[in-house]
Image (cartoon, rainbow, N blue to C red; front, side, top):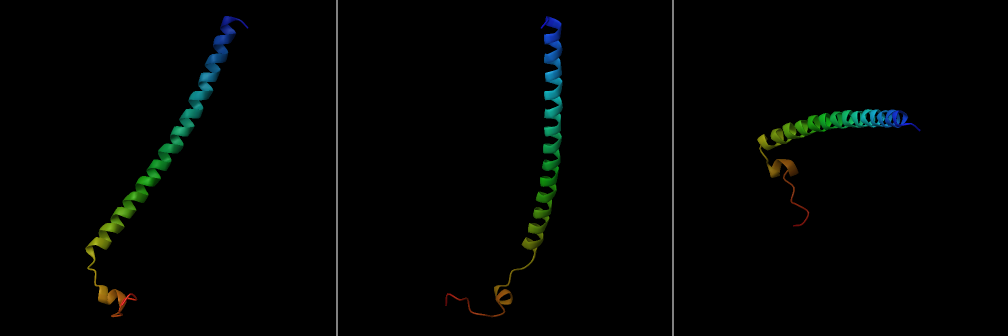
Length: 68
């Protein structure tokens, strides 16, 4: 194989590798965006729950806990 052919093979391999890495990066970016949206939803829900008053009597309908 000549030097030029060797360089062409290397360039082709590098281009293929770059394309594969780009596809992988795009998938990871999409997944990170999905996870950020999910985290935002969980944070909003947590804030909602924190703002609601907690009444153990109303939550248990006045029942005695089972360990008594």
